[in-house]
Image (cartoon, rainbow, N blue to C red; front, side, top):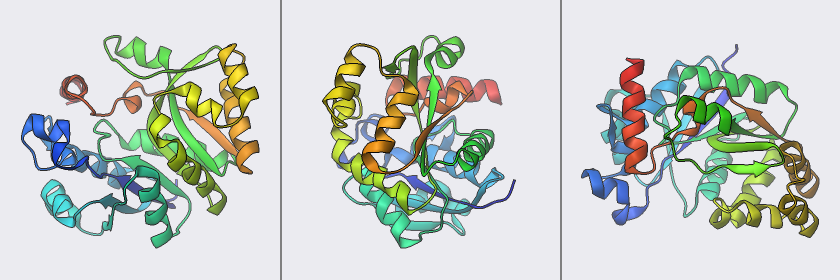
Length: 258
């Protein structure tokens, strides 16, 4: 597999009142140790060891935070000042170095592995989409981790959870990020997300008639692009570290891996 992808890691915190940073006494959420290793370093390690990623940029408030989290792993990584939202941060980072295709992930994806990165990039690279989103089915997640509390979106017979992995294949794919800015506050409320694409879509969703492929078809038609899901076979891909129970689960998983 050729190393052709640019990875952008969205790692901005929530300011001085970030609950995870305060709870564990660290300066920034992404510096929080997960099984002894800052979680931003875990994300960067996975990207560096993948067979797909050629370049890495981190979108964050300050280079000092990156230095604290990465130490000797910092070399060759671009640091870009974050904006006031995740989608705007992604857009600005891509505009500074528009080297497509682009993989977007987050700094709290502590369980990310090179295998997940390569699987996602391979499937997103060959599906012909301008924009791809990584998802995992509820059955995959709950079979492996029945105790895990995740946000599932139900579309027809499918229940899926986001994996914080997105692919932008070209300029056209940026339209999703522009729409994402508008929808950012609704990301945990699927009916609001669907309603943004029209009343018919909302009715179909309410009746349970809107399939996963149907959702991406509507997004494609409304935004004038080709958007597709990439379903990942890795339960851990849907587990980020956003609350104390996530940290406990992530550390238990990493101890088993080791």
